[in-house]
Length: 400
Image (tube, rainbow, N blue to C red; front, side, top):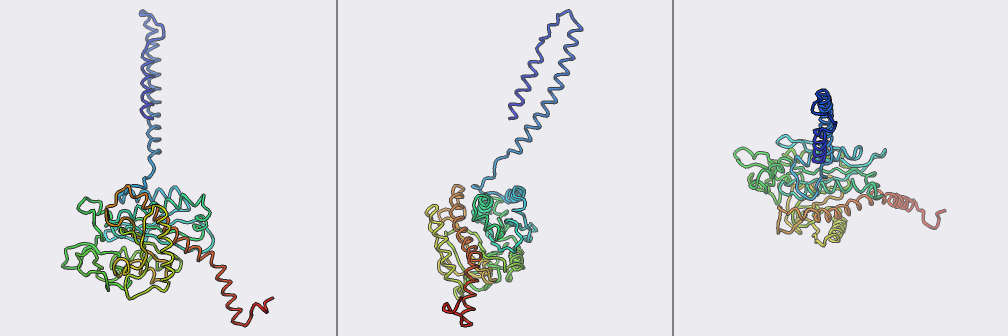
């Protein structure tokens, strides 16, 4: 567009430089008048040129390319994207700050939902608790975009966004994620960036071993240089504290806790400690198997479902286990692609299929939790009434 404007202006100037006014060589006054006319016209054209160029530049800025959900983005771009989502969906998407990292950076989430007068339930999703798992933040961004694109045309999504708010943290371990982008030597950084205890020269705590859920018992290390160093105490890290404080203040509202990781193609349910079993283990397995089936239908990828000790390894202090212990009924860890061919360095050409299948699995869990809470309310009320009637000796024979 800018090139076309410049070309047009040049052609106008060239045309003005040609004497078409028929002055004879002897007519000084005529030439003087023509010169004055040309200067005036050139000044006018120059001003128009400036205005057109400014307009063209402005249009070029406004017509910036759409956000690319199928490549990895550094933290600065993800932060800008969050601001853009808030601008594009006023009243539906809003940025919420709920803590600071060890290095003082903001931990932000996007709250997404439709305004309603009634009290709402909630869905939690976090990505990027482990810095090197770049596919996880990519998925959180994809998930947000999908639900915002969908609710205006899909009555089911509109209903869920009316009944529930979605709290999505694209990058929880902000310091670690930024450090993993520093250069190739830091690409596989896992932990946060807090310094080790006195006498230790190593940095970082594994945030997914730092929650107050059987903390420090199995599958952790107290060696501060280890990848699974669990910290000096439960919730010693500001990032873990931020999540715990936010959810504890409204834990009765949350139906789902989904924490997104890679890799391994797994859906993990509580608990990571082999001596503990979730009260709703059977239901969690059923819902997880349904989610795995939904995932497989998209691109044929198979995800295993089970507790961490059963299909991966025992661990303690995970956010998934902590959420279930807080009473949040549906708590899952997603371990996205792949099975180890590329590991944490999943190529960008696999972002789209990974996100598409994971979205299907997450949506299955969220829909189940929603329908059980809202569609099941009438059935639950009827069952309660029937129980009361039976308790006082009323049966079908004497109901009128």
